[in-house]
Amino acid sequence: MARQGTARRHAALLRRSALAGVALVVATLGWSAAPAFAHNYVVSTTPAAGSVVTEQPGTVVVTTNDNLLDLSGEGAGSAMQVSGPTEAPRYYGDGCATVSGPNLQADVQLGQPGQYTVVWQTVSTDGHSISDTFTFTWQPDANQVLADGSATAPTCATTGAGTAAADTDAATDAADSGDTAVGGTDLLWIGGALVAILAAIGLTLLVLRKRPTN
Image 1: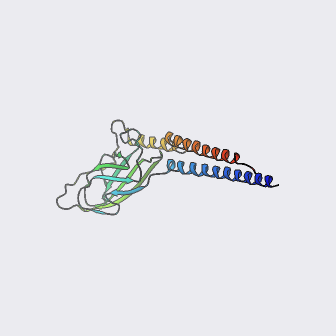
Image 2: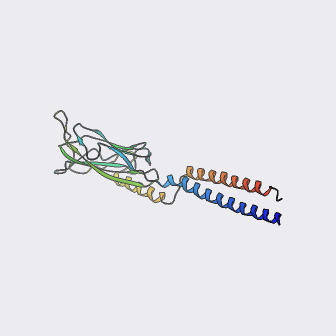
Image 3: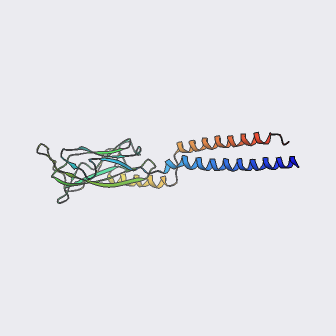
């Protein structure tokens, strides 16, 4: 009777160990796969959204929480449009934007005083297209040189980047593939974690089976 009771306790312990191992595998896979599907989000902008600017910014920057995806190495999939003032808007810059780590940026010289709007688009680290807009107020001091701007929205057409429309298509394609794909690095990480966890579970079960039953 004592031997049967001990065997039942060992069997129950084996079942609990196996269930704990499965739970650990599921939790680990969920944790490791999560970053692969996370969208970038904006940390800050330059000029700051809602701020008053008195000197030519030179460069408009959108900073996100993680490195952005540069599809071609030349900013494909990214664009930035700066227009203002609100009362009689003109467009400034060439509409192109470059990616540098977590930053999306464009060289811009502003024109007449007033409220300016920045519309931007880029590709998140997970392959999805992301975009947003923000505004700031331009109140140049007397020493600032004002740009003329353009009456029509610019079309980015730098070598290797294609037109703004092509960039948008590329970003959309990347977003579509990002819905179901996990990067190769993520697969290797997940596979390695799974093998290590299963090996630990197997070792635990082997040790428990070898314990004496009386």
